[in-house]
Amino acid sequence: MKRRGWDAVWVRVRAVRMWARRRLPPGVRLAVGLALIVGGAFGFLPVLGFWMIPLGLAVAAADVLPIWRWFRGR
Image (cartoon, rainbow, N blue to C red; front, side, top):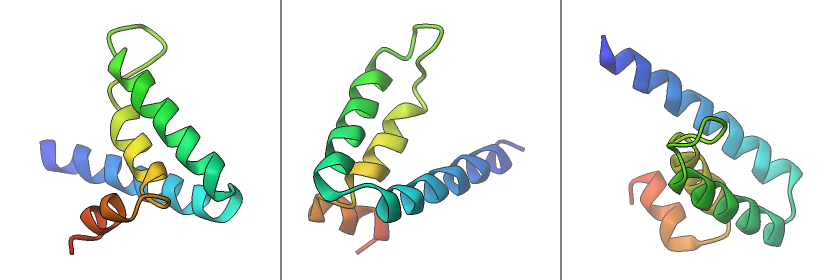
């Protein structure tokens, strides 16, 4: 049951990552990714959430090669 929930999260993360790679310039992707990670650190607040951390990593990964390799599993 829990596995299905995480699968949905990763599907959403992949969709946002693809959107960011196509639509945002490289410097902006990194800034947006870092902003999402910082916002995720305040996940206890009502508007922000801990879901922002993996999303920020996925967006920033397009610009930081070691993170990109980690996401691809190599």
